[in-house]
Image (cartoon, rainbow, N blue to C red; front, side, top):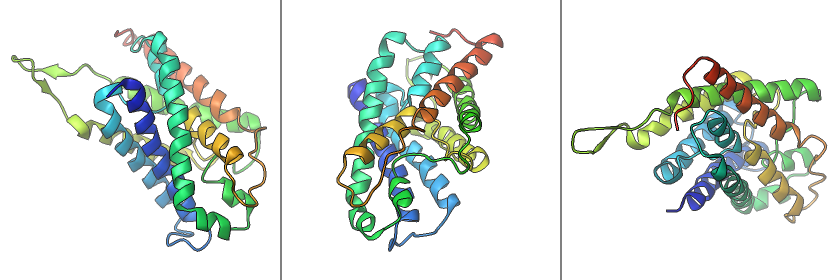
Length: 248
């Protein structure tokens, strides 16, 4: 599988699960209505696991422009590949959120609240204070990226050249990482920590024929883009400052 296709498919799966669980929890007349934050954060984490398992062997499963940028800054990823990865991630996020909308279309139609209709697509801060919201995204993404940087060790091989490692189980640490970020730091902005995760679905909310949907809140949309990119840069800077970066 080509790396572009892998990033597209992996991010699609992530957003199908992530947008899907939010739709299940917030929209009217679903089986999971009002099941809460624990359900949302758990499904997002397991969605990351699914995406990483599928895309990991082919692209490294970044599934997030902040990851691609952070790894590139740290010297662990080629800058020339960043645009290709980011484009695939945004397209994948659009496609995955579109799938979630299709699955829950009847429930979107049954829901009157415009904010609830928007929730499966884009993040919205609990308290709208843009500087504070930006800091939340920076901090959450910094935690994500620095842990990922410390987790991207070269694959160990035995004497015959056979890889030795956790295989798909290597996705579990990343899933737990996203889970704890959501539980501990996600209550302020909904923890985008991923520009594609917010931008792609926000575009879909704009273009899909969702009855009574309201606006897509583009005035806020820069926060979940700029915040994660800054967080990735800060994390990579700390990583390099500690003298452990630069593995190409």
